[in-house]
Length: 261
Ligand code: MLT
View 1 (spheres, rainbow, N blue to C red):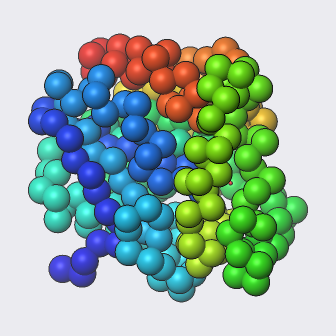
View 2 (view 1 turned 30 degrees about the vertical axis):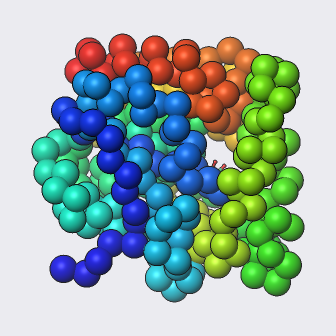
């Protein structure tokens, strides 16, 4: 078997809950979920290929969200996570979760989709991603991702935790430029899952933030309505990163959902 490029950090025992971070972050996005869950669940934090402690990548290594999903399946096999699990994906992690459902449905017990969308990119968004990949490779990560900093967390969250932006900066700027390019080009090619939502029958929790401009509350609510077994929740005063912006509320919703399935 080829070695997985994703890297996993595992805490606790019990029914597995696997966490996929967004772009351009890493498993540290989920640092506030470990302790509340690990007494009752096996918490599996993933560094997707090229991010955090995972194996470095070039765009040709991971050409699609499907490639990320298949790599995750291999990483979980290698970690002996064999029983059906709950997959939690935030934004890009959600795009990968849709592909995982498409390709490895039998392994899923439930889905938690945070700040993500089922739609593919339009031509402008594809062009922007291509530019961002080029910028990362020619000028470095900081030049490619700095503009995101203002969008991913709400003013309210920054007031609550004045160190939040600095912390995010350190995580984002840590991502190698080749990984930025790889993720952007793979996201640009992602397929549209809108017409397949009605076939996603596993229990699902869909979590939005009222201040999220990237995956809006309206888009996410529409997505949840199209899924036969989905529950929708919007967290007030949160932008794109509820697990780190309002961990207490996020954990309440997650634990309540996990307890109900
Ligand atoms: C993310 O948080 O993963 C990104 O906003 C996803 C995207 O660029 O579409």
